Image (tube, rainbow, N blue to C red):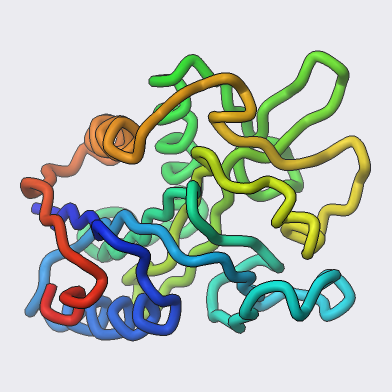
Length: 226
């Protein structure tokens, strides 16, 4: 059984890292359940292990956090749903490539609930939406880390963030003017947090084939006790 957690208030990024570190250690020790944690952060930039300093265009706009996940710079903020995925791959297939592909499938299936056709692109991390003018815009990001085959960090889907905030970085190191970022709202798809969470849950069970616990809703102040 995987514990399905939804935080009802924005979570401080350092607090989220502290929780994930403690949870993945407990999962490995067998003293805590595997968990999916849905939440939002206040506006911030994160730098993955491949981030380049020159890709941070506005270093003073929002707080910047170095993080151990893979990838480069990304933005997190209100209107973007984050799913931190803490699973023990030893219980299934210890195959990181297959795990990332399952995350992609999860995002694509979730977007389909809202009539959005998300697609993979070779050489580009995340999920992309082709536009009529030949552009392609990124709607979801993936950045994961694995320790002793237990995963953490995860995915983010742009529901209705301020897309201009992405201009403070080169998102995921991709500066091609034909590529940008988008959201469900920018595509004309209205979705509440609850509707997106429901689609994420249904699609997770479909893609991963794992049973989920009932929703556990917590304020950000009580996540230490999860």
